[in-house]
Image (cartoon, rainbow, N blue to C red; front, side, top):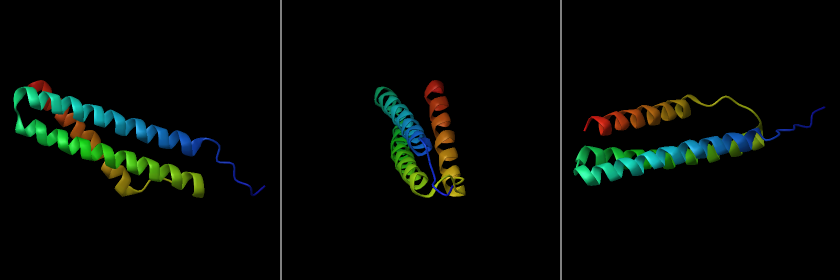
Length: 101
Protein backbone atom coordinates (compact mmCIF):
# COMPACT_ATOMS: atom_id res chain seq x y z
CA UNK A 1 0.00 0.00 0.00
CA UNK A 2 1.76 3.15 -1.24
CA UNK A 3 -0.99 5.62 -0.42
CA UNK A 4 0.21 7.77 2.42
CA UNK A 5 -2.26 8.71 5.12
CA UNK A 6 -0.73 11.55 7.15
CA UNK A 7 -3.65 11.67 9.54
CA UNK A 8 -3.70 14.80 11.64
CA UNK A 9 0.02 14.93 12.41
CA UNK A 10 0.66 17.98 10.24
CA UNK A 11 -2.27 19.86 11.74
CA UNK A 12 -1.28 19.00 15.32
CA UNK A 13 2.31 20.05 14.65
CA UNK A 14 1.25 23.36 13.14
CA UNK A 15 -1.14 24.08 16.00
CA UNK A 16 1.54 23.29 18.58
CA UNK A 17 3.96 25.72 16.95
CA UNK A 18 1.31 28.43 16.74
CA UNK A 19 0.43 27.92 20.42
CA UNK A 20 4.11 28.19 21.33
CA UNK A 21 4.45 31.39 19.30
CA UNK A 22 1.32 32.81 20.92
CA UNK A 23 2.70 32.03 24.38
CA UNK A 24 5.94 33.83 23.51
CA UNK A 25 3.90 36.79 22.21
CA UNK A 26 1.96 36.96 25.49
CA UNK A 27 5.24 36.97 27.41
CA UNK A 28 6.48 39.76 25.15
CA UNK A 29 3.35 41.79 25.92
CA UNK A 30 3.78 41.24 29.66
CA UNK A 31 7.41 42.27 29.45
CA UNK A 32 6.42 45.34 27.44
CA UNK A 33 3.97 46.29 30.18
CA UNK A 34 6.63 45.80 32.84
CA UNK A 35 9.03 47.94 30.78
CA UNK A 36 6.43 50.70 30.57
CA UNK A 37 5.84 50.65 34.32
CA UNK A 38 9.52 50.57 35.33
CA UNK A 39 10.81 52.65 32.39
CA UNK A 40 13.44 49.98 31.71
CA UNK A 41 15.15 50.12 28.34
CA UNK A 42 16.54 46.61 28.74
CA UNK A 43 13.05 45.20 29.27
CA UNK A 44 11.80 47.13 26.27
CA UNK A 45 14.52 45.64 24.09
CA UNK A 46 13.74 42.17 25.46
CA UNK A 47 10.05 42.65 24.72
CA UNK A 48 10.84 43.70 21.15
CA UNK A 49 13.09 40.66 20.66
CA UNK A 50 10.48 38.31 22.09
CA UNK A 51 7.80 39.84 19.88
CA UNK A 52 9.94 39.35 16.79
CA UNK A 53 10.81 35.81 17.81
CA UNK A 54 7.15 34.95 18.34
CA UNK A 55 6.46 35.91 14.75
CA UNK A 56 9.38 33.76 13.61
CA UNK A 57 8.17 30.76 15.65
CA UNK A 58 4.65 31.04 14.24
CA UNK A 59 5.99 31.35 10.66
CA UNK A 60 8.29 28.35 11.15
CA UNK A 61 5.38 26.35 12.56
CA UNK A 62 3.15 27.11 9.60
CA UNK A 63 5.98 26.21 7.21
CA UNK A 64 6.71 22.95 9.06
CA UNK A 65 3.02 22.01 9.11
CA UNK A 66 2.75 22.55 5.36
CA UNK A 67 5.92 20.56 4.74
CA UNK A 68 4.62 17.66 6.85
CA UNK A 69 1.29 17.70 5.01
CA UNK A 70 3.02 17.45 1.64
CA UNK A 71 6.15 15.40 2.21
CA UNK A 72 5.42 13.34 5.28
CA UNK A 73 7.26 13.04 8.57
CA UNK A 74 10.78 14.38 8.65
CA UNK A 75 12.99 15.37 11.55
CA UNK A 76 13.29 19.11 12.15
CA UNK A 77 16.43 20.81 10.90
CA UNK A 78 19.28 21.98 13.10
CA UNK A 79 18.54 25.66 12.41
CA UNK A 80 14.92 25.21 13.44
CA UNK A 81 15.85 23.51 16.69
CA UNK A 82 18.54 26.10 17.46
CA UNK A 83 16.12 28.98 16.89
CA UNK A 84 13.45 27.43 19.11
CA UNK A 85 16.06 26.84 21.82
CA UNK A 86 17.18 30.46 21.54
CA UNK A 87 13.58 31.65 21.94
CA UNK A 88 13.15 29.50 25.05
CA UNK A 89 16.40 30.75 26.60
CA UNK A 90 15.57 34.39 25.83
CA UNK A 91 12.06 34.04 27.24
CA UNK A 92 13.46 32.49 30.42
CA UNK A 93 16.10 35.20 30.76
CA UNK A 94 13.49 37.93 30.30
CA UNK A 95 11.24 36.31 32.91
CA UNK A 96 14.11 36.11 35.39
CA UNK A 97 15.08 39.71 34.63
CA UNK A 98 11.54 40.99 35.15
CA UNK A 99 11.22 39.21 38.50
CA UNK A 100 14.60 40.50 39.64
CA UNK A 101 13.98 44.12 38.59
